[in-house]
Length: 440
Image 1 (spheres, rainbow, N blue to C red):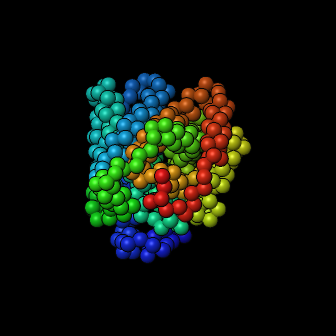
Image 2 (image 1 turned 90 degrees about the vertical axis):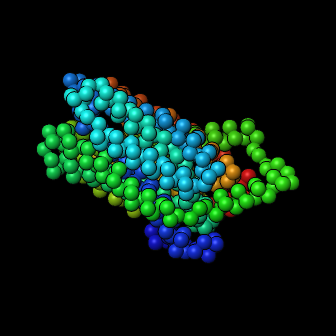
Image 3 (image 1 turned 30 degrees about the vertical axis):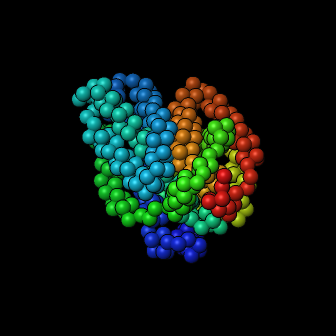
């Protein structure tokens, strides 16, 4: 299945198989590191809370750490708009190199920030600055990589090829979680809280050099280049066709509503599931991280299958199955988790298999709804704003509502968002196999 992602029908495009494979690999490796850098913050949030906030009130410190997590998401729309516009003007490749370096800079800043005990509130301030940098980078990276992989993929296999995006995202998330398990198991709790949590941030910043070398050799998107060439030709005779403001607003709103349910579910079950089990069910941290690692291995295996099913059944059926699963199953899944690690493994595995249905084809689905001349700008704004509103706040809302004994309200929140998403997707036309050049 994974090999098919790299080799399916390369002759449908002009670029050589070797260059196309290398470009997909470079995009995926960079995406992996971006998400490793992004996720380790959530994974190590209990340690960051003790190190960079006032440790005298542990609950307040953790909530503050999660609030900074949400602040990073708040800057994603700006990053999406900024780098989405850049990607439409100077190309996807240049944009993806820039966002990767910015993310690495944020990780390095977190790694070297002195503790709260050393510099007081300035430690918290530096953390906020670092997360703002990462938010900018993350908004741009998501935007450019969604469009790039979809644009270099053969139309008949675009769902399968685009699954490489979330495959790399998930491997990066898995590495972050595995590192959390390893550091928790290898170091005494005092050492992990003192300096061990800094290791993954140093590692993420250093590995960016490898991704940079790979991305310098990427091809530019042919779909993008054809659009630029066509625009240049049309300006000599007539104005380039443009979508009306109303059409852009409606499409952007639909993308945001689609993203609402998918983002809350995704961040609840990928970045925060282990932390939830540790915080509210007193699960052993090492065991919780390990259970989450094994659940994410199942998820990684399921992602290409989700892309394949989207190419076979269509985009709408697999997406509607995802929404239905969490409308029906969110209460049983959250209620399944106790202080036993196997309960986290079972609940998270089930949730992630259904999430894979959407993750396997999301970049293709969203790219197929937007014409090339607007694609990264629209994705940049709509996706990033939706993630900031729904994804970035999910861990905080989960922590707050469960802490107040109102966990049921968080589950109802997920159900409502999934119902809205289902209604939106029901109105979409099926886009399986369409040519991106023909989208208007």
